[in-house]
Image (cartoon, rainbow, N blue to C red; front, side):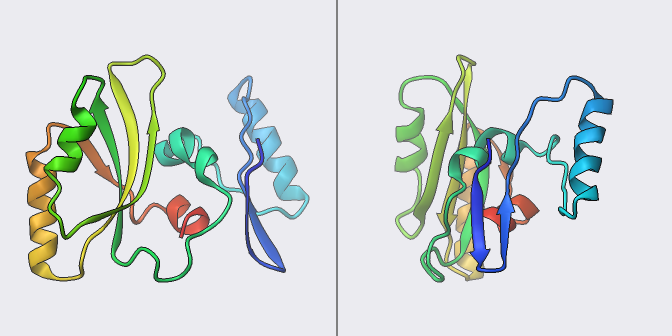
Amino acid sequence: SFPVNKQCPATASVLAAFQAFSSDDKTAVIENLASRGFRVRDLSSNELAKVHLKHLVGGRAPAGAAPGEVLLRFEFPDKPGALDDFLTKMPDQFNVSLFHYRNHGADVGRVLAGICVPDTEAAKSEFLSYLDQLDFRWFEETSNPVYREFLV
């Protein structure tokens, strides 16, 4: 698949996903692209890219549309009420700016969520308390280069 995020008229970032038959096969594809002048980044160990990114690439929100956005990956238990629990425990001052759910029959659903957190120490502290009270594993992805290159 080749989702594209065109940043300006002169450049575009292309996410190319392929299944390599071996590590040598993967290396050959990467070297071939690089020899043709493409900047190549191997994202095969990046969970954000593997699970969510290819479904979300295609455009960016207008500047300022999601102030203070924090990007998080969650493992939601695949049980009734998990999403309701996530949303009802969230304090009113936070806003969900992005939500993507993936499940392939596992006991957890993989969720990517952008949450706008006001830029104050009190808000950040309350946000961390909110995350701590959830029974979900979570990982912050805000500084992930894939997020910066393709989504913001």
